[in-house]
Length: 234
Image 1 (tube, rainbow, N blue to C red):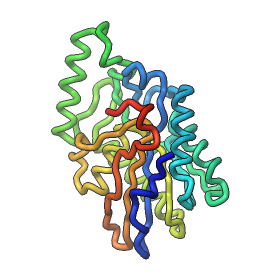
Image 2 (tube, rainbow, N blue to C red):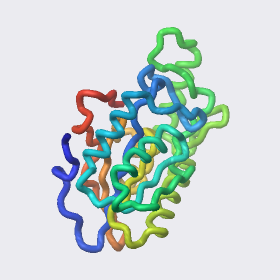
Image 3 (cartoon, rainbow, N blue to C red):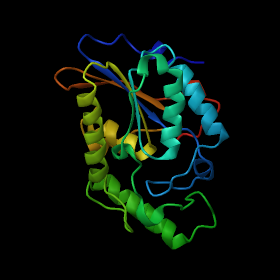
């Protein structure tokens, strides 16, 4: 197993380290379907295996808090991690809706790689995707969210964890592809609209340090060495 600690410098005094993970694979990931926040699709067998491998890749890190989104694919990935780290995490297992996946509205369930898709719907998704990359307030139609919505709730959830566990230096959070991209861009990259530049494979590990003055430093993004033969990146 490739340990993520091998690519990380020692944690600077007074700083805290966030290990932001994407959940393991689901059948919908495999089929290229848009899950979003509206569908609670569980991990598949491969996803569970990825989650266990991820827990092992973090084995030597004294994680003190494991947080996750409320959706089962992230929750189960986090629970597998939590069980492996029970000695240091104890009962600091937190579930927050703020880490849930972006709601893609009418496009959820769309298999965007599928030839059978209604071309008009696919074209609409493509143009909405472009719109969200240029406009922080562009909302996915049909009950979806904007990038700003996701930024607001995910950064609030992160702040809540930092405030509630001031003594914990190593914090793991399991969330989702788009939510992670937005959260990383809004915090460590300093501009939420940089989210399209961030890649996230299943069980990607992102490591970011935050110092006493709330300055962020990226240590690694989309680390996938632990699952490199067994993951679809997007």
